Image 1 (cartoon, rainbow, N blue to C red):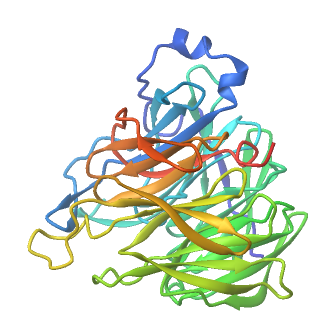
Image 2 (image 1 turned 180 degrees about the vertical axis):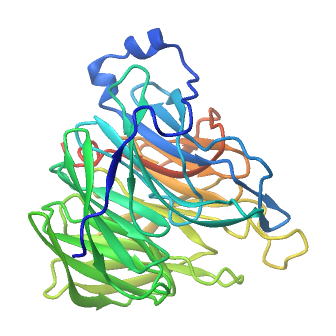
Amino acid sequence: MNAMLRHRSCAGQLGFSSLVVMTVSSWLSITPAAQAQIAVSANDNKVYLDNGVVKVVRAPPPDTLTIIDLHSHPPHAIAQINVPASVVGPPSSVAIAPDQSIALVTAAMKVDPADPSKQVPDNRLSVVDLQSKPPTVIAQVECGKSPAGVSINRQGTLALVANRSEGTVSVLRIEGKKVTHIGKVTLGDDKAGVSHVAFAPDGHTALATRDGDNMISVLSIVGEKVEYTKRDLSAGLKPYGIDISPDGGLAVVANVGRGNGDSDTISVIDLKATPPRVIETKTVGQTPEGIVLSPDGKFCAVAIMNGSNKAKDSPFLGQNGELLLFKIQGTRLALVAKAPIGHWSQGVAFSPDGHTILVQNMVEKEITVFSWNGKKLHDTGRPIKTNGGPAGIRVSSRAASPP
């Protein structure tokens, strides 16, 4: 790994203020049990979709982070603060520590200071203290160019960040609420498109997607030493989002394709095989952006754009995105339910009990809330409004593990 990068504590040096959409008293009233059931949504205010074209907002308001109470039915937003974020990269650009003490939020892109009609790579990861009242950004850490997907191990001691514009993975040490960049692992060149990295439950292995050169790299982890094993898997065209089952037996990956109207795929990786290998690939529709496994490992949820982000005159235009639910049958996937969602849809997340599913919709600036009983998928009709286009969503790794 390369030399350590500088960590900057920034309690009063971040250059942006917190925007809170709840009262401090309401935050104080949340019980510890309720605090253990939260999701966080990173929201991008810098861009919008104009007839199929992503454009930069002139003088945009700050990006935000929405904190969602999953203990209530239906879930609702309990806080919102200003945090740099980005829709560029997979919708796993935020992670929550297992003890719910902090959230990590990456910012892959920022408005170009020299040309406000364009974006350029950012390198910031923000550390949010979820236990302060109200939640507060307490530090920013410099990662590589365009930090995107981020994950924290179950031990809460290490985080890995995919740097999309330089072909590397940043390694971060976590000590309580202190987060330090301790090195990088190089997987490829700046065209590799390293997008997301996911830990296996035991913390000794991680998988990193590379949408630029269509590979999934296997990393080995011993303590804080992270190495590229040189083992690469081939799933589909432009592997992007990835999740690993709670028992570590398999992984699912979303292959987003080239966005030119063809139906794209998701793949299953058998992690029990020696060595691990891709064993199934299924066609799901245009652009599977978000992918996640249920807390019990029995289901896989996939949010597809379905052409909902295309121009009005495009032959590939879809009227809305779709949420697809697959049942895990051994190491195979079987479609069991689907439902319409919004437009330019991004991430998807299960509540800890697996009975609620959240789906982000960039155009509507809201999160659709579904109830799920293992057989029927139902839109509650109670979306969660976000101050910005919701672009990344996660629950904590511990909350997502089996009881």
